[in-house]
Structure formats: C-alpha cells, structure tokens
Amino acid sequence: MSLSNLLFEIVYAAGNQSSQQQAPAGATALALLAQFIPLILMFVVLYLLIIVPQRRREKQFREMINSLIVGDEIVTNAGIIGKIVNIKDDILTIEVGADRVKLKIYKWAVKEVLKKAEPKD
Image 1 (cartoon, rainbow, N blue to C red):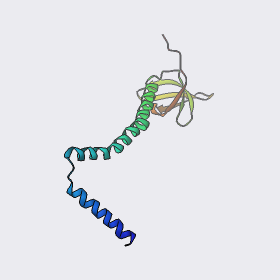
Image 2: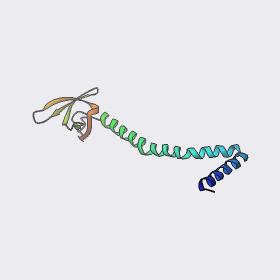
Image 3: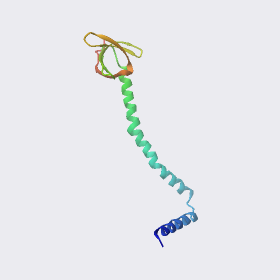
Image 4: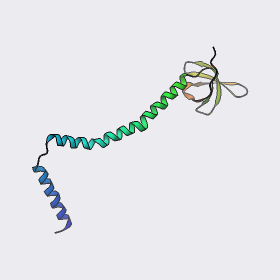
C-alpha cells in the first residue's frame, strides 16, 4: 500500500467519524469564536499602535496652530523661518529675512514654533 493511499484512508476515516458524532451547538459556536480571536486581536493591536498615536499627533498639531499669536517665530513645511506679523482667519502674514519681506501662508503650513512671543497684557 502506498503512502498516498494510507493518508487518504486516514483522512476518510476521520471524516466519517466526525460526521457521525455531532458536536453540541455551544462547542461549534466556541470553535467559531476561537477562529476570530486572532483577527480581533490583530485589529486591537493595529488600533493601539497606529491610530491612537496618529490622533495624538493631530491633536498636538491643532493645539499648536490654535495657540499661534503675533510675534511667534515659526518654521513652515517648506523650511522658511519667519516671524508672525498678522493673523487673519486661516492665513498668517510672516516677516522673512533682513529686508523684512512679508509672505502670506496658511496656518496648516506651519511645521513648528521656534520662539513663542511674550503675550501682551
């Protein structure tokens, strides 16, 4: 008898035996749940490792953008360093360079705040 015939008979016998013995309904539900546990755990880990830190960074960015005031020294996403001279809605006017060139940029283009201005009383 060849190895493939032997394996076929073992699988066939196991199939017949499992079809004759019916598992209780609770056992099949538990087995179904056990199959989904790794998938559920994968989504939980993905949420904790990717989504939560991203939300935290977005919240910090919004707080930084909302706390900008005239006189702050900022760096834009393009690497331009300037001092805020005017804020109107979502547009900042910054002063750049020794000859004080004024540029208008959107608030979302601010990468970081280098120096916070002293709040005026």
